[in-house]
Amino acid sequence: MNSLSDMDNFPKDYYKIWRRKEDRMSDIILEMNHITKEFSGVKALDDVNLKVKQGEIHGLCGENGAGKSTLMNILSGVYGHGTYTGDVIYKGETCRFNHIKDSEAKGIVIIHQELALSPLLSVAENVFLGNEQTTIKGVIDWTETRKKAAEMLAKVGLEHENVNVPVGTLGVGKQQLIEIAKAMAKKVDLLILDEPTAALNDEESRKLLDIMLDLKKQGVTCIIISHKLNELEYVCDSLTIIRDGHTIETLTKGQDDFGEERVIKGMVGRELTNRYPVREGVTIGDVVFEVNNWNVYHPDDAERQMIKDVNIKVHAGEVVGLAGLMGAGRTEFAMSVFGKSYGQKISGTVKINGKEVHLNSVKDAINNKLAYVSEDRKTYGLVLIDSIKRNMTMAALRNFFSKKGVVNENEEIVSAEEYKKRINVKSNSIEQVVGSLSGGNQQKVVLAKWMLTQPDVLILDEPTRGIDVGAKYEIYCVINDLAKAGKAVIVISSEMQEIIGTCDRVYVINEGEIAGELNKDEVSQEKIMQKIMAHNRKGE
Image (tube, rainbow, N blue to C red; front, side, top):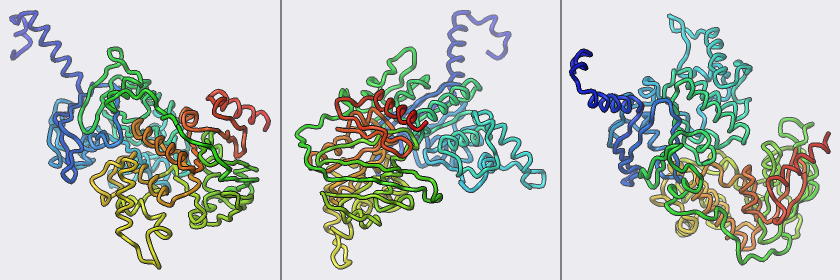
């Protein structure tokens, strides 16, 4: 057909078939065909295929290390053309991106899990970072920058935000929305969000997901990577499952089962009937860890009390949860106990195995058999440019792997290999750089690091944040093994179901105080919230 007039001579049935095919083709904004990517001879992606429709929210899910982020890094040009095989077809055109700027020029913007904001620069400066608003002479037009920044913020629900304040003074939830505003300023057509709600509470997460739905109405196509399956079910039109570097299936809302159990089966390759493994053969022993009358003040404000007269105790073989809302003081309490890593004017007593100990430094804590797995594994838990072996052994190096300052490397290797196998760290070898691992495997390395110090008390702060259901299950099994070994374990988690599923007893913390205590038989989300609300009323 060379012209519209040729349609008159074209059979109507054939025309309808051709038209439907054309409509279907125009619906597809992105195709990634037969994508294969290797790292050091290991296939991270193996013949992966993905199709995304114009104007939809498309989810990507799979276990840690399945290849989701690698696939999106190929799409955004982080891994340039030639480092992989296969085709990226965007808006009908085969693309060969060699740099992230190449994809951004086409309207593809990626927001990584680690926010790319400069904390000391203002909100307006961050919104146009790398995309500065300049005059004809190349000078930054600050009036225009602030005006347009305010316009972009309004699109993500931050219309009342001061664009002149340093972005580092804002909460993580607002920073995540500013990242989206930054993407909008680049005239985004396809927005990729990698674990956007990993560090957010439920309220902030819901707000961000609703912003995504608003962007969809504005014609923006979104791809979201997330381990929070309830969020994917809420926001996505389609969902592609990747397992071990292969595309397993794509589910469509309204046609396929979008339920969590169905998606988990696709992710792990089997039914996961019990998210929390049963803890058997554990005898609760004597009190191992006890904190009395614990008080802590803010590190930058000596008049602001963060922790007020907290008293807790944990027995041998017992897993105790610290539940509460974001900002309740759980992490502040844990860090202040662990070698006074947080706060000032700290008072109170700590007893381990019935003996009062003075933990004035992290070294003191380690020497007294206390370990703390931080909620921020990349800042406080790992040296990302070093090997798995070094990261596993660093905390135990002085007490277990060296003599008179000389490191026994053979013992290091043996122990690292043992723990790599014991907690199933998926890697090429113990010499692999830990920063190249998936989030779940990084978390396992942090756990191994502290387990190698042979602690009697282990505090786990958000131990499963940002990792998939399969890796979560493995970490729950590790927690059970620690309890069976007679350790005293404290779990801090923002996921109430995790607290309920893993803990024998729960302390509810609110505004830096113990709001209540619940045993295994009575703990529930409702009871936890009742304790918090009752404590709030008491404060009034």
